[in-house]
Picture 1 (cartoon, one colour):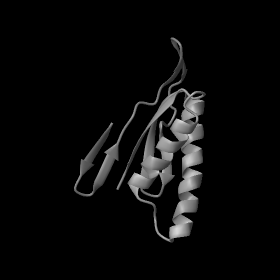
Picture 2 (tube, rainbow, N blue to C red; picture 1 turned 180 degrees about the horizontal axis):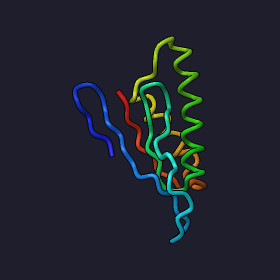
Picture 3 (tube, helix red, strand yellow; picture 1 turned 60 degrees about the horizontal axis):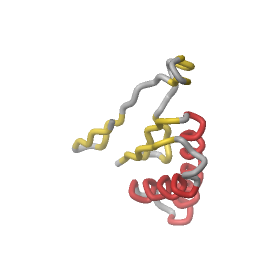
Picture 4 (cartoon, rainbow, N blue to C red; picture 1 turned 180 degrees about the vertical axis):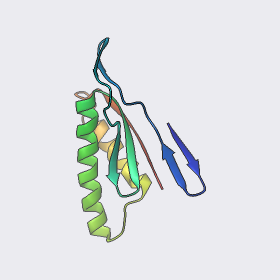
Length: 100
């Protein structure tokens, strides 16, 4: 869940990872930083979601160096969208991008 306010965005999620009915990890951080002020909320397969977030963070770091300024949240969302679409047949994860 993300809520916008005058000074930025508040992003929250649960922390439980399960496999079927069994809870595998009760304290997994489902909020992954993509850049200094951009985060994504992870859901679905934890490994798939973290892999997408890691690839997106790497691409955004390169993007920021090329532009010599921080990437926009829209650019981050587009990077995540493109990675998710490219590997859509193999992945079982969903990400929500938020930032300010």
